[in-house]
Length: 135
Image 1 (tube, rainbow, N blue to C red):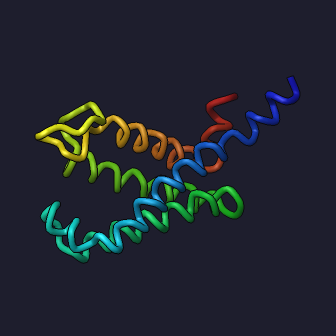
Image 2: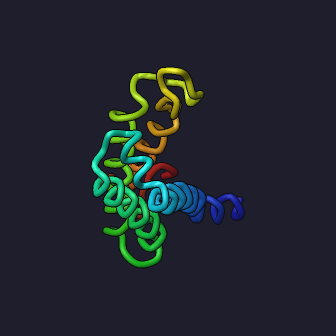
């Protein structure tokens, strides 16, 4: 049973690293594609750069939060909630399935909703988000 307790204590790293990877990747790729995304989404170019920067900061903060400061974890969660709410509202709504379709070439909202809800858990619980869930 001791091994399960050890895994449980460190299981938050699986979620943190996953979220950080998702947002770091999406943040980095937005910079070289910013003009194309701006035109395709009908968003001002500076908003694409702000979004990319937010995603990069969130990715760094979610990892740094576990090592240094609970507030960084909560800020990362809030950044992710904001970006995912925007993605759902502007791109993926109302299609549920992640599969691209003629009306939703970027797919539906199931992945974005899951990411948003996990991020809300980090906002609410900070570094104890997953410890609270296992108590």
